[in-house]
Image (cartoon, rainbow over all chains, first blue to last red; front, side):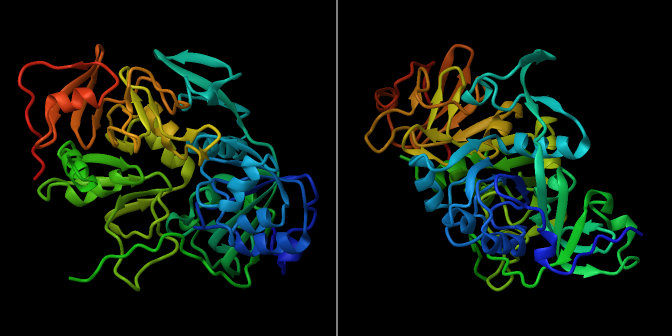
Length: 233
Length: 218
């Protein structure tokens, strides 16, 4: 077994420098690597390009890095819940690249899978397609999109073992499973880090080869963005 | 004139037995409440769940189980979770039978705009561009006119497009419209709303053939 375990979040994030491109897993606040984000705020690393489906909310998730103006550019599909984000974007302080969610996911997956580019129909005929190669397949128009290139991918899983094998829970799998292995170095923070041999190999979602560093997060707030409930009859 | 709930009720009639359905945020989400009980439907949410159930009871919310609107949800027996790339794979490969989403503008050739108002509102397209580019059956739930009373049913969209030539049907507070190769065809009118009212509220040309029936909501 090749051991990927590191003991602290500080150790896990070693080598992250100003100006790097970093992928963050999660959808909204669901499944975000919150311990790593908190440590990034502490480190104060700047001029980051962040690839993440969303940009957090004002006081949680990547919103914390936005507040400290640590992010130079966001690559996302939807950023509607963050007032500070909107302010920085409209004032031109923040570069923003909005891309269709399926394209975002597939550009991560392509990087993970060693595919340099692919064709998708998403965005054909819209401003997203401007400047991109267009090709017709089976009578339908598609545009070419490229795999992401990221220095680090930071993902969050429910359980992991010291070999870096990951298991996700519920819809927290989202972009985490697409980003694992999609950066030069993948860091996994997990709710529960177990010794090898504990997890059933049949149940592993992401094999440890995709993960270079794994650690157990100190605490998980797991904030709910839209708490919706129904009443008991 | 229909309420948002009425629009959802009318769209629910388009949901057929054994359909896999993706619901957008807003009015489309309400459609799930009005699907006939004697048919079987599975709801897909693009953040990675198939077999979505109702909202959880208070105290049973799970931060790890949400829909694409970031709302806490439950799952039904037979549900599954998957990652985002897989989720859009099933959308692009047309496994999802019906997509219901909102719009700011729709044009008579089926173009849709719903993600950006330049200089004012830029929230992003989320999964809408992927959905409209691949889905074969797209129904739009929207208001017929904006707050200033201007038509959002247009000859040509004015806002940045989300997709081209993709919308099949539009349900508004005033009417049900079908998009045909010749443009918008008026299929039904809201209870108490005249054809003249609909024509006056619509910038695009309307194809009107014979008597236009009132919508049946319940």
